Image (cartoon, rainbow, N blue to C red; front, side):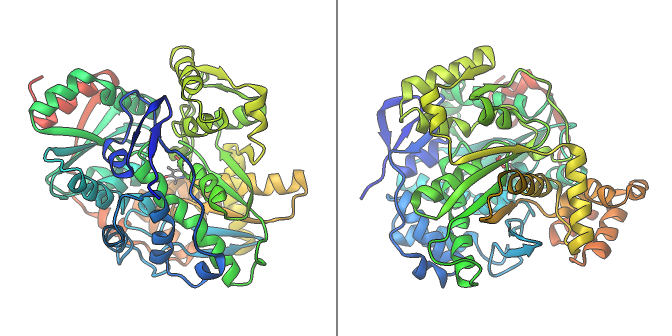
Length: 497
Ligand SMILES: *Cc1c(COP(=O)(O)O)cnc(C)c1O
């Protein structure tokens, strides 16, 4: 069967999977969604014994139906290889009474590697299939982790250039160093004077700019996106939920068919949406628990049915979740509106013009699988230090937000189902916040002294991704105002400003 994709804002056109991956964002500003969510066509019993790579093939072939088996297996095998520091790619670790799915064993030690190590391969394959001759320019807004993972994935990939925008004061020191030391002739990194939402809206505006598109086309370029608005990011993320369930079964932690809950530390809503897709594919997931930090716009949305971004933007210790416009929520809104592009476009227009929209009671009814929760900065810290003291396990700030919300949900609901927590970053990426949560006196140490202390405390060797930046040369120093992103892109590409 050939699965096609539609924009969430226009019901009239369909595109193939490879076209959707190439474009990133639909021309009308909508996001591409599959016209239906395919079912798994292998049993959990089969999946139990599969490698990560074979699981990836079993899941992705259902979504990316216009890729041949050879193409898809080549993409998968080029992505999930020695770049990961473990053969199992996404290990499950039991921490107290919850299962942490560690998604940070790739090249840049955040879960973004799970999708961004394969996206360049999916994209260059798509370009070949669709006879694209222009250079593809990947435009990416990052709250810290996507940027580095995308840079690492696309560096020196022939036929591509990548430009990353990050909020100047909105990322951790390690995140910033990882980006500004990136090698590769085709890479550019720009610090913008603004927050992540400014960066993301700016990038979306560039995608929708028809005039710019024409100018770029004449210069031999076309845009695509490495953000999770690209369906080529989401599909690879469905894989690890299928894989995790199968491994729980293999390890006899659960019985066949037993439902589990999944808690996901959420920002742009990509990771949890992938879990929702996994559930619809047939994975026995009961609750999808959406964990926010103090930017709790999603918590309020799940509670009230009103999405309201008109509030103060808070800089927290989990910067990759400092987001008020959660772009992938649009895919859920579209689904609960009954795949109604007109209705969805109205909500998104209200979000753009007024910063707020309210879904209907019928739509809210369809959100029963979701639970919202949030952790304050204090609760995040307490979760890191409390877990360390009781189990010796050191987790990063984002994962701690989820661990807190997971426990709070279990206590308040009495729901005794087994709990999977998506563990999204290595603690090394947020060493200062993690170490000072354990003991505030660590704050006196500089970044790399902290990292050495973290090694002693956690017993986990300093990852290669951190060793790499210790003495690396700073290669990117460009900055720009949030309203000058277009000029900056043209300057980088050598297109007349
Ligand atoms: C990106 C990111 C998140 C949020 O994921 P979304 O898919 O944007 O919801 C959470 N934790 C970390 C460490 C991240 O890098």
